Length: 153
Image 1 (cartoon, rainbow, N blue to C red):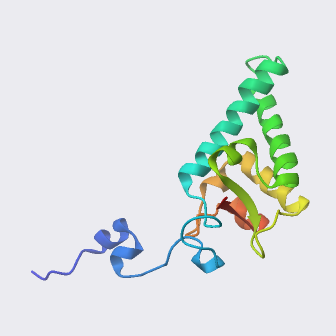
Image 2 (image 1 turned 60 degrees about the horizontal axis):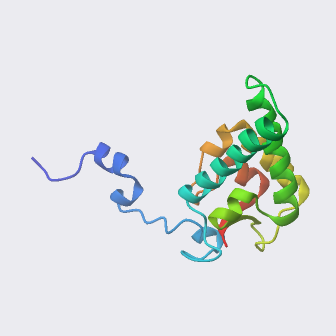
């Protein structure tokens, strides 16, 4: 019996187990491996979206707007989309992103994304599925379509 690993062992363990080095997330984009300007990891991004969703749904939709509990999710989604368009469009980050130390940047120089890219990114983010499909640089389909990346402050 030979000692070669089964194909499932390399497939399940990922490409690194097969001897392929893909580098760190953001290396292909010219971003640093760690610290300011590096690609924001899943935990920070998830925490920021969760904070923003709670602010938009509970504090604004149900608290300020007094939305009916049955429609609060849809009203909250509308407020969430408005928050993203306005805040990411003008300052490059939302309240949750600021709390978790991340921001949205363009690929070409790290500046604030243009308004059209923010609209596209927000629309795809509200659909949720594009945000759940990531590439090896930890960019969701909404980031790829809008040519943006979420980086650490």
